[in-house]
Structures are given as C-alpha cells and as structure tokens.
Amino acid sequence: MGLSWRNLIVIVGLSFGLGAVAASHKTILAKLGQATTAFSSTEGNPNYSEGNGAESQSSTIAFSARSLESSQSMFSPEHTMPQRGDVRIIVISDLNGPYGSTTYGQEVLNSIRTIPEWEPDLVLSAGDMVAGKLISLTQEDLQAMWQRFDQQVFQPIRRAEIPFAFALGQRDASAMVQPENRPKSQSPLGDLFSHIPAGSYIFSQERAAAQTYWTSGDRDLGIDLSPTQFSVQSEGNQSEGNQSEGNQSEGNQSSFNQSSINSAPDAQFVTANFPFRYSFVHKDIFFLMWEASTAELDATALEWAEQELSSPAAQQAKMRISMGHFPLYAISQGRDRPTEFLRQGDTIRDLLETYDVHTHIAGHHHSYYPGRVGELELLYGGALGSSPRSLLGNDEPASRTLTVMDIFFDASQAPDVWAIEEDENDEPLASNRQRSGVEALEGIATVYTTYNMTTMEVIEPTSLPRVVAGPTGLVLRQDTERRDLTYRDNRRYVRSW
Image 1 (cartoon, one colour):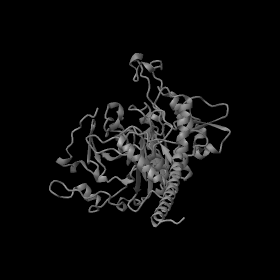
Image 2 (cartoon, rainbow, N blue to C red; image 1 turned 30 degrees about the vertical axis):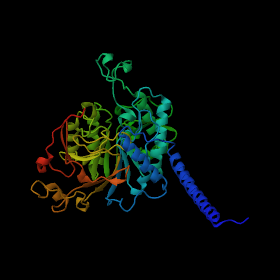
Image 3 (cartoon, rainbow, N blue to C red; image 1 turned 135 degrees about the vertical axis):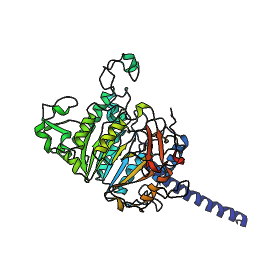
Image 4 (cartoon, rainbow, N blue to C red; image 1 turned 135 degrees about the horizontal axis):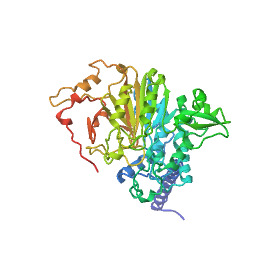
C-alpha cells in the first residue's frame, strides 16, 4: 500500500523526535550517573546548614554543579592563585555539623579536595573538628565522629603529604569544669549535670576520646613536636589519665618527636600536654597551640606558654604564631557574651607581644576577619561548617570560608592586597599608603587570601569593616592604625544578644 506524502512526513518526524529523545535520555542518564557517584562519595550527606535556608540551597546547587566535573580543578581563570610567600599555610576552622553529626558539609569536602592545589606547607585547624559537647553521646558515638573526621578530613590531607596541626575546640574536647563551692542546682549546664563532682571536667568522656584519637600510634601529623610534649614509659607501667608536667619521664623526653611514636611499638607513650596544648617548629616558624576551648584558661596555661615562648626553639625561629579556639576578643554576632571569648584576652596579648609573637589565630566566632589589637595581628578563621556568623555591627551575610595565609619574611616582597582608600578629604589613608609601597615596609608580612567556599570567590579585604566594635573595645582591620581612624570608622558597640 502506498504512503501519502503527509504520512511520510509524520513518520520521518517521529523518527527524528524519538532519536533525539533517546539521545537526550542517554545524556541525562550519564549525567545522573556522574552526579550519583559524586553524591555517593559524600555518603548521602545533606547540607546541614543551621543558617539561612537560601544559602543552604545555593550551596547545594553550587556543589552539585562542581561534582559533575570533580576531576577538574576548582580554579578557573577568574579564581587565580595568590602570590606565594616564603611559607604558605591553609587555615580552616569550625568544620562541624549539628551535635553528634558524623557528616560534613559540601564546603568542607570541597575544601579538603582543593587544598592540595594551593600546595601549602601546613594546614592549621583552629578547632571544632567534630560535633561533640553533648553529654548524651556514647563512646561509640564519639569514636564514629573521630573516625569520620579521619576518613574525610585528616587522612586526605596527610595522603597529599601536607603536614597538619590543630587546636582543640569546645566541640572536640571542652575544658568546661563543674565549679567548686557552688550548689549542684547552679551548675553551668543545669540540674541535668549536677551529678558531676565539683572540679571535674563535664565532658571528660569527649576529652578522653580526643586524646585517644590524636595519640594513636598511626596518627602522623607530619610535624616534629617539641620534646616536652611526650614522655614514655615501658609497657605495663602506663599511668592512667592525663599526665602533668611534673610526672613526665625526664630522662626520655629529649629524643621524642611525632615519628618516634611509630618506631617504638613496645613502649607506651603518655601525653604530657598533647593534644590539649603543645608547640612545634615548622619552616622556621614556632607554633604555640593553646587549650582554649572555654572562656577560662587552665590555671597553669600562662606559665606554660611563657616557658614555651622563652625557649631557644621559640626565640631562634624567624617568626612566632599562636593559636587557640576561643579568640582573645569578640567580633561576631551572638558570640559577644562574656562566655564566648577569653576573659584574659588583654593578659594573653601582653604575653604574646612580650615574646614578639606576630599572629594569633582563633576560631569559634564563625566570622572571618583579619584584625589587630596593639602590636598583635589577629586572624579570625571563619566557619567552614555550620552556622557562619556576621560581624558585630555589620549586615553583610556570612559565608563559609577558608584562608590561604602567605608569610613573607621580607615584608617588602609582599603584594599589595589593600586597595587605596580615601578619607573624607579624598586623601589616601596613611595605612593603605604604607601598604602601597610609598613607605618602606620592614619585618614580616602576612597576606590573607580568603575564599567563600560556596562560590569559590575571593573575599575582597577592603569589603570588610576597618573596625569591629566589641564588648572589650575595638579590633582594627589588619591594615589599619588607630591614628588613621576617621569619623566614618566611628563605631559604638551594640550588644547582639
């Protein structure tokens, strides 16, 4: 039977249409397969943001788009590498999700995957690596959290042969203590914990879990810890609990560093201070890691810090950096209560300045800010995990951030990252004129390149306020001198809680 020309057109059209649908279907299936593989690598992890819902949605979309091409570099032409200093450090902080969570958000996973591209000499974490500080967590829960941290954060960094160091945060191993001489009903966390004896750690089980994880024999940080951080005892003579400095095995201390742990399987290593506080030298920089997981420091902390900073190792280094989870001063909304920053901030700063510490790094406030008070530079690491926060007195939305810290031992070689700003008379501000090279720079310079890890965009330094007014005074932006403040910088602290 013959076909009319109309029937032929219909048949040909249907053939083309079905072919296109089939081709399109194959493409969609292929992309879905790639997306499923990428998503499976995160073990079905949803975006756990406790913050703005719109931000969570955009974060998920951005991550999904990048996951389809996960083998490609996350750096495109508009995401250029910063100029490298003599030493490059990646600073991350507050990676955790909700209480008890064993998953990490997309920004955390993307960051860990991207870190090797920056080729850092060291990765520093300013704390809150896991999601503890919950009294109901069991030993199995705590082990699961640290195991997931090991799998998704620590081991990928170390497999890339990048050294790693950290300060413990309140969600890792809180040092909160049940107060002495106070009725049980007035315990800081209520009657639920009134059974805990006065003077005892409220989260002792979490501290033990953190100590167990970090002192495991296969936990190679890639750094040489100061000999005072470890003591050793023969098998069968291991002391229980955390050892004080006075109980260390003095005759064995001088030969131990991190690699020693792996080479002496018949010995039991007892932590003197590590992982709660410790020091080390890396790339000719002395690092002091405080235990600052609450607003109150341990009674021996200042004495210990002065001993470490006055040591030959510290004083012979080209530069000194300290780091602790709680910051010296408040800068973020909702974290300006007296319990959210160190109560001895000025005392600690005086000590650090006395021993010529260049920079103090902190987390906990979930806001990125390159600041300074007095002669001490302050780097506030923003939250890479849940609940980033806006700066005090600032309406700009918060973002999840990672900071590339380039250190130039000769400040004159550092790039000019501060755009020229003008005062009310359209004259260049003195601090920025100095940064522009009109005046000679001396000493050490730190240059921060900080990324919004949801969008991979660089946060422009001059987009940050020149001053943050907090409950203890002003924190100036890194490039700003107090004498250069203008009426536009006049800020009054307004309590955010």
